[in-house]
Image (cartoon, rainbow, N blue to C red; front, side):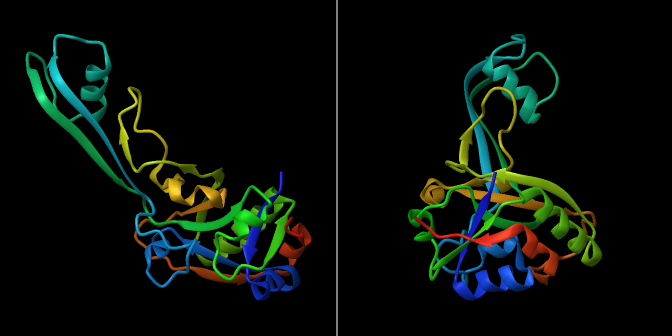
Length: 214
């Protein structure tokens, strides 16, 4: 499966000719200076909630019991809960990110300001393995893989089993036309501040080609 990188021609040519890639960060996407299609002030955040009308701790089954167990706010036995809401807020840790799209389409390209060209990455695994090697020489990372973004509300209801999809793999419905695929690298050092990186590695050009957008 290929993925597609939409951008201004100068950036496409940098990738095709020199292996030039900008690896961003999750928190950087929250900054106001980004163009339309990139800025998202709520990147990496979500909330999960559950409302309880009447619950007795003597009942060891059902959605309310699952919520009590999973949220973990109340321990013990012999209590009742009435008209209470559980909420948990999630703010994903900062990480390195490279975004592409899983669809080749003019409608996707139109989502990004000034984008007038597209590069197909046709050997996705090899492309990201090489970027992982480069990143590890700068700041050791764990490659979390390439994931299709889920589009939906950041305020979720408890699903009865867990807290749902990771907060760094969710975007609001208005971004759905971008068809985003997201590669993620998690820094092994939790105490080090990270910033976007501009890398050039000629070997990356072997996995890319320019493609006409229909």
